[in-house]
Structures are given as C-alpha cells and as structure tokens.
Length: 401
Image (cartoon, rainbow, N blue to C red; front, side, top):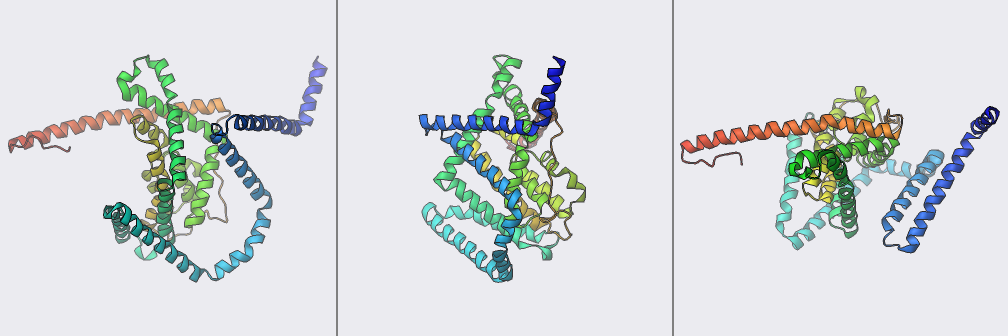
C-alpha cells in the first residue's frame, strides 16, 4: 500500500498542472451546461445568471488578451495615438466644447420638461467649484482636466443610472439583490439573540448586518475579486481623468469598502505618495459610505439603488474636488508607466478570511454603538439646556431640531 501511495503521489506531482487544468475544465464545462439548461427552460428567469456569466467570460478573455498581446495592441494603436498627441491642443478644445454644448442643451430641455427648479442643484455645483478654487492650496497650479472630467463623469453616470431605463432598471435590480442578500444576516441574529431580536432593532438587527457584510467583503478580498473590480474601475477613472494609479484605485475602492479599508489596497505605496495624493485619498474616503454601513442604511428602509448610485457618482466627483482644492505640485512616485501592484489577503484559506472579516468588524460595531449612545445623549442634554434658556424668554421650543 505504501508503494502504491508513493506512486500516486509521484504521479500527481509529475502531472499536477495538467490535472488542475482537467479539473477546472470539468467544473467550467459543468457550469456552462447548467447555465444553458437554465436558459433553455426559462430564459427570462435565467437572464441575470446569463448576464453575469457573459460579463465574467468577457473580462477573463480581456485580461488574457491584454496580458498576452498588450505589446502588439499598443503597436497597432500607436499611429492613432501619435496623431491624437500631435493634434491634442486643438482636439481637447473641440472635445470640451462638445461636452459643454451637450450639457447646455441637456439643461435647456430638462428645464423645459421638469421646471426651472432643476437648475438650483446645478448652480450649487458651480458654487462649490468656485469656493474650492478660491480656497485652493495652489490656485495657479490647478490642472483642470481631472476637475472638469470628474464632474462630467459624475454627470454622465447620473444620466445613465437615473435617466435611462436600462441603467435605472440595472441599478434597481442590483439594489434589490443586495438588500435580499443582506437579509440573510437575520438568521445569525435570530440564532444568537432569539426570536424577539427585532425588539432591540439597532443592536440586534442592524449591527449583525455590519458583521455579515464585513465577513463577505473579507472573503471577496481573499479571492481577489475586490482587487480585480476596484482595479477595473480605477483604471477607467485613471484614463478618463488623468489621475495617478494610487488615488484612482483608492477612490474606486471607496465605492465598495470604507475609507479605512480602501487605502490597504495600495498599502506598499502609501509611504511614497504626495500630499495631493494623500488629500485625494482622504477626500474620496469621506465622499462615500462604507459597504458595511450601506447595509445598515438599507435596513432602515433607504433605497439600496439610491445608495449605490450616490457612491458610484461620488467617486469621480471626490477626485475632481480634491484636485481642485489641493493641486498636484510634486512628482508622483507611481505613474501609469511604472505600474502598481495591489496588496493581497494574508488569509490562508476562505474560512480563515471569513473569520478574520467577522473579527475585524468588532471594532467597527463597537464604535458605531458607543458613538451613537454618547452623541445622542449629548444632543439630548444640549436640547434640554437650550429649551431651558428659551423658556427664560417664553420660547421653550428652542433646540437644535
């Protein structure tokens, strides 16, 4: 038996790579068979699975082709790139003029359809840009490309998500799926706290949801999915806005995780970032809500699609504002040509990653609970003091509310 066991081990060591390929090939084939079978039975019911599968196949093929033929693709597009660089001075003005005219015509038609009150938010946006420029650290060194492209990107995302049926339906469907998924945290809360856990809604309903979401995010981080997703979103913002890889990746990461977790994606490069990049990292962190807190807001009845839309639109806007308030005056250490490698999970397996995610959430849950207790108590005291002062002048309703 020992000799047979040694032969089997030797066989696996010799053909380890081929065995892995065969094993994964069988799994992928079985999955595709299941997808096609589900689509043939009821395509409408299997449409989400079909779309997810198609997107996964597309991005896998894209990554494979870019990794293997990136040099050839660059050579193929180099004549067009050279032409654009040669005439960029005029092309950029034509491009910006087209964007500005499109926004103006959109505002005209939108105002005619929905009323002039729609212009209030647009004027508020322009006022914020003016204020940031006035109080900018280096107003004469502002690079306007990330500012205008960030605002334009926010406008385009808002238009696609809120004003087109396909975008609205897609984000509405995604919000419903996230809300349904997060409701599975009720099972753990019910097991630990009993059937009447909803009697203490925030402590036993909302906070367990934060723990569950932190666990899931840790597992996705271990699998490399979060690094891949934030890398793709960050690459789009980097190309479109001209921002550095570090700040682009952190801004993209803040869509899905909190401002304490997103910088960990670029942890090896943090000691070398410029002050402008550090400001962009902090600004993007404050511009969006953490994924775990997003789950808490959803449990209060807030629309998941609205929260997702706000997080997605805020990512490019945060970079635009940060680059206006603190322009780049130094030479970034990490550029598009130097490349950037994101940090990987230190968990040994998926189960350990889940356990670490749950343990990590302890501090977050405790901070949420104690800060709510302390600040609500302080607010009640201040309101009572203001009411007492107001009562001296026959106005007992004086308060922060």
